[in-house]
Image 1: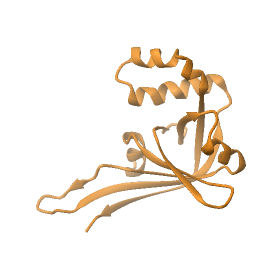
Image 2: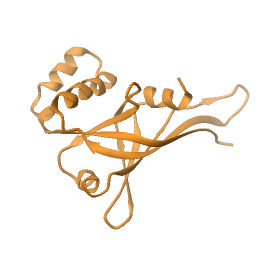
Image 3: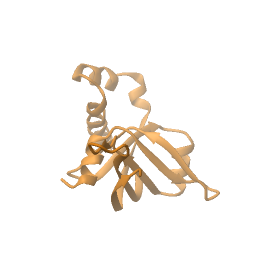
Length: 146
């Protein structure tokens, strides 16, 4: 597994960026799931809101993830790996796929299967929108803070 894909699989938070109607970037923190087999990223959100409205007008997105990094012995500076994904986003319309990918996303964050099932059967689960990001281009970089 490449280092970039490892960061996508292992890390739990990312910055999701879209372009609003005035050409300004709009970035929000998100939880996500990277489906390595499909090479797609899935995030969830409410069915309404600024991000959803923007995506209905423009499907181009930027998705940035970084790890906690490490320090080399005897050095003060951190070394972190970041991944930047440029791609197109689409709403997951297929209800079976939405549920399947939502369960995978939940498995990344919830401590037990019971917690996942409890959440999946809650009223809020019916109000979830799922967004699939199809990468067009992905870059990874090891950043030394010195």
